Amino acid sequence: MQQEEVEKYRKAQEIASEVIRYAKSIIKPGMKLLEIAEKIESKIQELGGKPAFPTNLCINEIAAHFTPSHDDETKASGLLKIDLGVHVDGCIIDTAFPLDLEDNEENKKLIEASEEALSAALKIAKPGIEIWKIGQKIQEIITKKGFSPIRNLSGHELGKYKVHAGITIPNYNNNNKTKLKKGVYAIEPFSTNGQGIIYEGKPSGIYRLKEKKPVRDKMSRKILNFIETEYKTLPFCSRWLIEKFGTRILFSLKQLEQQEILHQYPQLIEKGHGKVSQSEKTIFINDKTETSTKIANWFF
Ligand code: CO
Image (cartoon, helix red, strand yellow):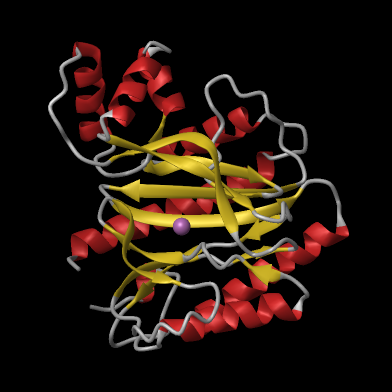
């Protein structure tokens, strides 16, 4: 990694930490998710970064991939997960934290489980460790608290302009003997009092460019060019495009999805409709040094 890139990660990380502090200070029960998402995303830009993906705001049994649509009225409640990404020229920091917005004992325990699983995983995520061991640690801690990890959601390597690149980091012992090597990774344990499996629910309004193909419709072509320039291979949402071009782009999005130029992510729902907590941090792994959540400690 070049020094220049290190600086970009450092900046993205500073912005992410600041935005987490900010988000924790503004989120209150009953606040519209739309307002929360917009404030978080504006803050990221105000601090000189860009959102690496639309802010995910998932309540209770929704584990991932919910971002408010442009006219969403949903209010913050229950066990809320805030999953946000910051990038500086494609260098991504992916991070998430849970909040209990109803002063509920079970929520608090679920939060404790995902938080403790994350800290334990970060402690053992050293260069050369086989990834099943990280999964096993996460599983062990969450299970000990009487809950289940979500097995079909996992941490992941982060690449330039890629939220999911290379290897995945399991949330249970999947017997995968791949060794952790130099790179940037997001570790994200999910704890639930449900079945520990998610299924694909309704469309989320979150998309990413899948494959560029020729487009005949003028408006769709314009939108596609904008997507390519602005987001490259990073996820974006209909809300962002509507803000810029108005609701007429919904038709183009539909067309581009039908032509398999865009992929739309489904919402991910816990199978037993259990509550879900999620904790996530991005770490830097070098072949020489200790793992760190601070790029400052990453030597090259
Ligand atoms: Co992630």
